[in-house]
Image (cartoon, rainbow over the protein chains, first blue to last red):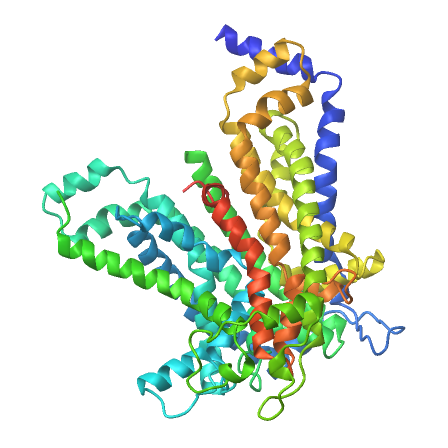
Length: 307
Length: 296
């Protein structure tokens, strides 16, 4: 007890006088940098979104209240983008989560050579998202895609299929590329969760005659509850804001079949040069993501408190 | 209890399948980069380069035009000039990424140590603010940030990219390092303080050596983030002054006239650095990811 108090007083004594200056010096650069590029953009978008701001009319930026929001939400293209993002998210998040879990269960097995596999699994996640997208462009392209060549060789198709440029398959193409890119992260998180399960618990249940499914439901899943929630929220955020893949794979097309929300915001600002409406769209997206962030932090922080 | 031989074989087969799913797309890009465009257009294509040719790489790095393009016929003649810029982009990318790593190590370490060891008013608020901002996806704030960078007169500069990337990586760094510093035993630091070290001295001589794995993890993260980032790079760069590899590779790949073999070269060139890093830093990346995504 007394040793503890001594230690505390040492920290206090050393800190006294210089400590406020020290804290300011160490924290200010980071706080300023982060605020300039997160809080400020938020405020900036909020202000911009209440003005009519067209790059084609740079000198006239009247305040128009919530008109931009009304306009974009009424706009058929925004509604289409929201629908597409919803479909995309509903397809990718469950797939990424389930595949990530399956891969984690596989990697958790003690089999010779799986050490290499645990290193390989990082690769799709480590490379630039743009490169991952272009890799899939080489695989799915309608003129020279390797998948087409393979299917032709196997006799599954008679001619090349334009996976990326046909409205019925373009969305699924982006979904597949996204899953390939994203499954490593959940796999690693789930694997870390699995490694926390005490071996004795598993052995005991085996002795008790619990089947594979019973063991998974009653032992494995409860241990994975926290990572599962984190993965679901995090992957939802990633899917809602995905942009790079669309850029290199489909450019939002054909037509508007792969125009996701972030693509719509980008096109509104940089193709149609309507900064006010673009800001409104990005503010809507940021606000939606903020809700997810708060939920995420609650889970992580509660979890940290328990640890 | 031992698993039966049969189930082991089944699991190993699943492992092989997983390895193929991960590796085949990469290997196809590599194979395509070593072929001529004509061979790539065969249906089905040549799966392996026969014979492999480094001509596409020669073009990108020395400007020597591949033989295949001198032959006219089925080939569309244009080859992408943009591909010649890739080496410059690679240098830009490395400069930006390494600067961001340096800023993260310097500012991140100082701030995390303060968060980990000092008690003061507003600490919790500052910490939560930093943690929350780490999750904000680029696209949500990309447009306002473009306008801010324009106001600061930093469009098309590497400095602009370094500032943005630092702002997006520092929260992550601080989250990982604060947890790391907190997990270190206090008594050695206290001994150093008793011996007359000041706060910075204790950090430098005692804490940092112990925290080396954490530092390696955040260096790897900030490098990968900065090297891989696309949205901001696309918006604020416009010339070889600051264009990074992802922007250049994307430009080549969406150009309808671009040669597909050169696109493949672009892929290979762009993934080498991150793959090397991921393999070398694997352990640190994995443990850092697990620590940063929440104490699971």
